[in-house]
Image 1 (cartoon, helix red, strand yellow):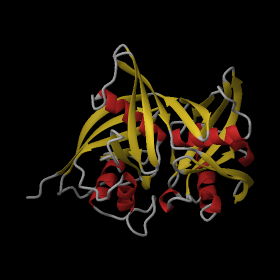
Image 2 (image 1 turned 30 degrees about the horizontal axis):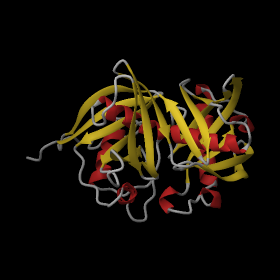
Image 3 (image 1 turned 30 degrees about the vertical axis):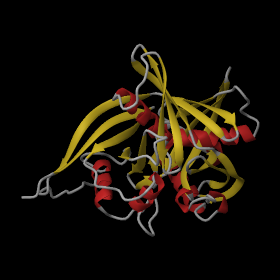
Length: 339
């Protein structure tokens, strides 16, 4: 008799967005780098939201689909780093496929690496966790006090603005969209230009607008990355609104719609990097100032632009559980379903 498939995970959330770390039960992932392994996972001719089927993708489907997951689930497969300069590598995934960057996941991985003892850390002070992701090497600085993790600061790959005021026709009218790459390509648009506010009640309309904008920009040159097709194409659409400034700098609320209409419950880590690049170019975020960045759920990241495209985003990640998921070969639902 065929034995059940067993997959072990440790789950965190960062500012409300889940991150499921797969620690056991993965098949080997061919490739000599994290980026190559990501390309392998997607498969020839595939895209981040249309991966090929295979043993690795079967595990992804098992973990994002009901009854073991849900359409808003997000996670990562642990893989070897590119070299000894990093502590670990990761392939980020969601319900529709794979992504090249994930700030909230990087923060969760930093907390997990320190909390489990994979990376030594002081009881009081900071520890750096270096992580190879498909877009490059990132760093999670884990903040500690009295033997506990109190927060994580994520330093992203360099962020850069690639297009401004791109006109896009939507069902809400023509809007102007800004594009920036920050490990993945993000399109930013003020929610008010769509006649919307960033509230839970408006989520159906915000998701609709995000999907329309992402589709309309599919062939725009500003979405393409000069170094790799893997990093090209719009990953997320950030719909944002202004809030009263704080004594430390600007204050915004956003919802990031990514993949095929998935909603980031956090303020979006990599998306915050993209917003920082745009605000800095506009002169709205000065040296020493912070962006207080809220999510549609009311959770907060703090972002800062350090110059030269270097950004840092600070938030908090918390353990939510440890799991061993099983797939009985007799289970007629197989890897599950999405509603």
